[in-house]
Image (tube, rainbow, N blue to C red; front, side, top):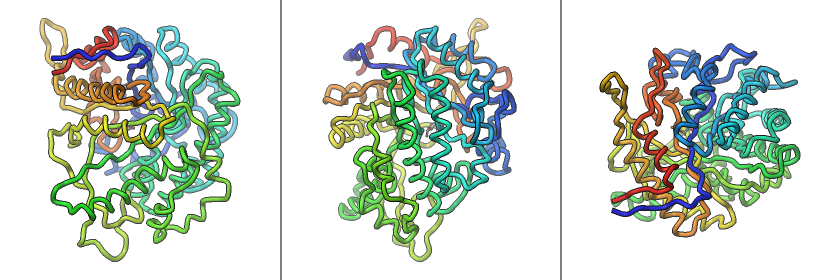
Length: 465
Ligand code: FCB
């Protein structure tokens, strides 16, 4: 057994997102978002679940902040529901919406917890989708305006601003394979959406810098697609499949954001789907804004190859221009999502990003696991003995520690998620929380994993085998 120690500057906290926890969808003047529409469309979300009530955090946020304080969280990553601020996606900000987030941020500060605010975690105002959504360039301009309103209101007190959470999911699951809101299936629209999210980031960052306190950190969070080799896939095929997956999965964001241009292979690979006429002269320079760190969300890995049986018209999917790309599940163990557990890949991903972008500090803005938890009542006290989640977290914190030892400038680690919540198209069937939520009574129960995180923060140390 060994004991690992985390640097005192390493921030340990937890994360959530507005639509997944807030509820209160008709309160405080909030307008409808694409996730309200999508979740209320039969067949889109498991069990017909919606975020109408979710964790009722809109009403219980003070108690939730007290729980965060009890666990000693150093930072809390939450997202702002755009339709609470601009119910129709444009115009003057809605005071009740601003007040809600001001209360939350002040409550965090009063408890010594650093607020990490994400501006877009997928709940686009429905009115903007009705006007064409992210495939329309105007949505990027609207986003910069919304960002300006938020920074005017909270720029003196939010420690960290994140423009987007996982634009890959928002663009390619939202507009590519239709698994996420708004549920469209159009490869060209998905690529345009990705570009407009990049552009929206590029327009918002200078707004944030102009208005926010100079000490504020500005970032974006990506979900990258780390892949592993499989012995059954020939080396040449594997290399080409991985190159293609990285182009439209990862470099479509990394390259313009961090290098100032789209890669030529991406434009070539997707030429059958779009002519990229949505990319205007000067856009790449606009997107290439200095940021203070890159947020990385990591859960699992996969392998890729080509499916020889696919030819002819593109099948609708999350990988526009890549109809034959096939993602294969790697050997387990698996979480309740069916995702393989591969902590070594987190270390490798962090090291590889550090090698490619040596100047860019990194932060793990999400990592965690869904497991089918069981509540045990002992002497009238409820417990969730989620040893599988504790061990998942231990292994991934250890991987993060190895990355730091290998020279990665890793600033922190935010566990997904603080609360069990609405897991998008899986509804409430998947539990990621370190705090359990009983959706009937809204009772919160700190799981063993919550106590594990609490001890980690208290002691700054982690025991590993
Ligand atoms: C990420 C999302 C987050 C949550 C986790 C499990 O893709 O950013 O909202 O759903 O996955």
